[in-house]
Image (cartoon, rainbow, N blue to C red; front, top):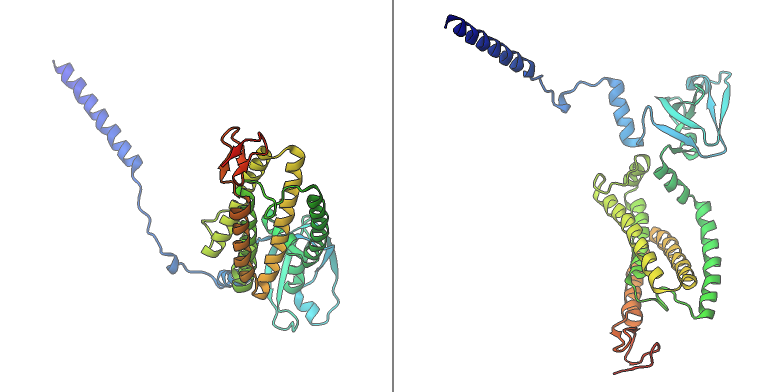
Length: 337
């Protein structure tokens, strides 16, 4: 009997010890929380935050050289400003650079902002910001895509190529009496909707650059495809880009089911040409404040053409073929009155 009581006492003691150890191990001492506004920052950190908010990049930001080359100064910027002998080295096209330091040089009357860059082979050199930014692009595929399609020389080249190509394609389509969006369209709203989305996106793209350049500049240096993590104007733009992709896939699928392969390819080439012209016309005209009027007129024209001329309202009562108007069916010859 005594042995049993002793055994129960030992078990109870061990159980209490285990519970105490468990509670002690799970205990988390709450550390004092300091609000962000009360965090003490050094002067260098304050300068870095201030520079980043205005220039949208700071230390450790990565660039890629997009020009043929860029010259970097080996010595300190003050030595060049003072007229002392200096040396420089060249960094070639597509080389990766990282921002190592940023310095304000008030003595420089041309550009007081100097940026120190590190190369892939561990060399460091300085250059003025005004010489750096036109020759580099952020090391991000979205930023590089934006930079490519913002190049004025490429845009002029695209205008010439698109106009010549579309004129030739339009002549070929008219000769064959083939289908073309807005004019001899198929019974699908997706192609018309795609052209309207492209026109709207191009207008919005140019409008952001015109009325909110700093918002676009920040997006250029810190791009994202998430429409819910950016300001509202950029959110609308990114949603339109995603809608363009989704509607484009739907248009291709609908065309593939309605037309033979050769006719479908010709139609899709014409659709791509119309979208390219929409992008060029609306992105340029919006910079001169007439793009919004053109967008309203184009939207009315596109919708009117589809619902009045291309939308199928009837089906043949005998074979089920689509008919644009009542009368004799061109497929089976049945009268539909």
